[in-house]
Structure formats: C-alpha cells, structure tokens
Image 1: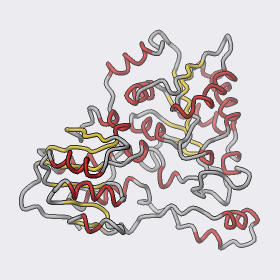
Image 2: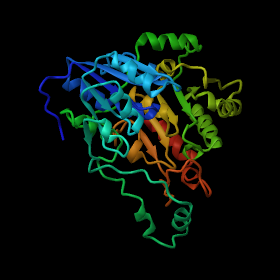
Image 3: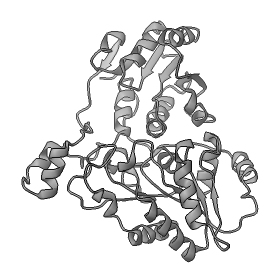
Image 4: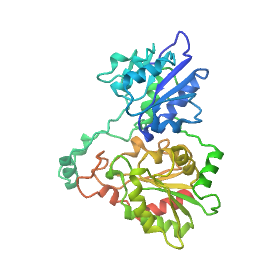
Length: 375
C-alpha cells in the first residue's frame, strides 16, 4: 500500500542493512527513492564498516554511521538531532525499527515482523512474490541424494519466479512510499582519481596486460566456496590463455587462503598481486572497477563488482542465484554457474555430505566461461 503525503518529506532517514552484499542489493530501491523525492535530503544510517560504500552515491546526501558497540539509545539520540520527518527501515530486525522510534521520527515505514510493528507507523505486509531461504535438514539432503522420495524437494519453495530476487524486497518496501517498483540494476560509483590512486598504491600503474580479479573467500561459510585447488587450476589456465595479471581479493579472514593460492600460482613468469586484507572498502571498489572480469564466490565483493559494471563469473553452491545473484536477474554480462546436485540450494553454511554442488562445477567449465565473459 502506497502512502499519499499531505506534505512532501523534506528530510528522509533510511536505516540501511548490515552486510556488504545486502547493502548493494538495496541500491535500486534507494535510486527509486531519490527519483520520487528528488528535492528531499536523504540520509543513510549504516554500520561504520559500510560507510565508505556510500561515498559519492547519487541516492545519498548524508551518511550517518554507527559502531558495533553503540547502543540503541545512543543511535536514537543521534538520529533525533537530524530532525527527520520520514524513516524507511530496510532491515527486518526489531532493533532497527526501535532506533527510528526512539529518534522521534513521525513517519516510520518498514516490513511488518514480530516484535517490531508497534514501532512503525506504516507496517508493510510481505510481498506476494517473496521466497524464504529455508535451510534444508541433513535428513532431507540425504533423501534427495538417495532419490528415495522425489517429492521431498517440494518442501523447498519454488525459486524460479521472475520477482524472487532480493532486490524486489527492497523495491516493494520503497514502493509503499509511492516510488516506482520496477527494478533497476544495482549501482555503485568510484571516481577515476580513486582508481588511479589505488593503481599507484598497489604497484599496478605500469601494467599493460589485462587485469583479472580472483575472490576465493565467502564470509557466510565453506558451503559457498568453490574448492581452492580449482581456483588455482583455473587461474593458471586463464593466465596462460590471456597473459593476464591477477589481483587476489579478500578480507582479513581470507589471508591464509589467499596466501595458499598466491604461493601455488606465483612463479618467475606469473605474478599475482595478493591484496587480501590490504585494501580499504573504497580501494577494493576502485580495483574491482579496474578488472576486466572477476572470478568469485557468492560474496559481498561479487555484488560490488557487478554494481560497478565489472563482469563476474560465480560458481554457486549452497545459495541461489535466483535469490541473491549479482546485478539484475539474467544480466548477460554475468555468468552464474550451478551443478545438478539435487540438494542445492540448501542454504547451509557447511556441507553435511560431500560438497557435490561445488565439486560438480569443473575447472574447464569455469575457464571457458571466464574467457567468454571477458573477451
């Protein structure tokens, strides 16, 4: 249900989401919000770790950040000083709705969920096309693998509808304020100056070969990670066929994995730039923009690269590209690879059996796809 405003909101507070990939998927809704309320001041409340993501974004006028230890009372007080007249709450948590309630913002819109609707003035019902990501049980996975009950898969909701993707969750919520619900591609921005500075800082300024990115980590868990030995084999073969330079991306938690890959790949003829744990978020964005393509697991950097216009190739395992794939669904720039494992997607962090969903995606298939995507 959309809202007709007696007066157009002049100061809008958007309570942003807490994870990198999810934040990128909110950008179409934010762009639609800007489109509708073009004269309004739009501020985004975001975790400090994501503050840099929103610099120079066309939908955001102001970034208000908070730290992990900051209390809900402190955040409410901070927001109260902004004198906002409308709040849009993108997360589904009770806390996020309580923050804008304590800020005294008179109009507060968010999804109706247990423990939070009281704090909202407009509690929006779940959209008709929403698909819940239900984790499969170990018993269900075993039965699917054995093929003993062909109907057991019906317990997982159908994912193939045209509006299953997570970006529609945010667009539907924003549409309750009267915005256009039609999807846009997720969008982020970096400047040429940022790209130039990152190239200089990390020793890439004089490179004349094509630059490819490799992102072998995934915060969610190992069930989203294509095996490391396959990343190594694919990187070697792609390097032989393209004479590319590889940039290895990752966070602090990926440094051991990245070092293993870099050690296996590096030789006198083949240099890999291991930048895992070394870049700021803005530097990561600049370097992803620089890449001709990114070979990556389903992860935050996957979404960032796609939103910057860099083609991505992604082996999908425990998660669903129909729900959380990069960019707009069916964007021809990106290639999302799946095996025929009957238990995928399971949405589990760790595989309880033999990791067949990702083991079933071959090095040869990935190499061929990267070459086609980046030619």
